[in-house]
Every structure is written in C-alpha cells, then in structure tokens.
Image (cartoon, rainbow, N blue to C red; front, side):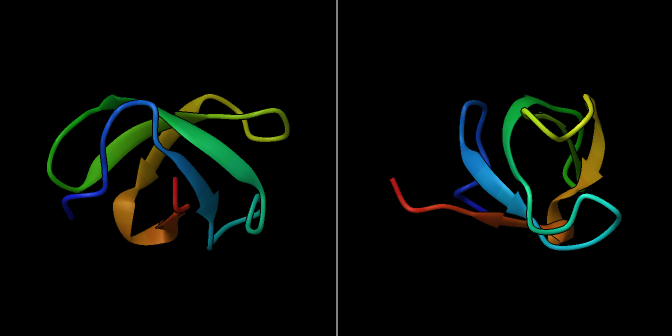
Length: 55
C-alpha cells in the first residue's frame, strides 16, 4: 500500500478502537505499523485494519 507512510492520518476499521482517528508513527514491516491517537493507544496495527485519510 503506497499510502502507508509515517505521519499519515488514518481511521481504524477493526477492533475496539474502530472508527477512531490515529496517526502512523512507525512502520514495523510490510504488514504492521505502529499507530497512536487521542483515543487510540500506542500499539501495533495491521495495515489491513486502517483506512488512510485524504490529505
């Protein structure tokens, strides 16, 4: 996914924090990134569970 990059704003689409806005703070590997947000804990997240927001 080309739009997955550090600093990109996203919406979580799965899990208990689904629908919450977060930001990518680190890329772990080709499947996982680290995200953080106001209502989202700093944690690892599958990129398939994120919806990038338009800039």
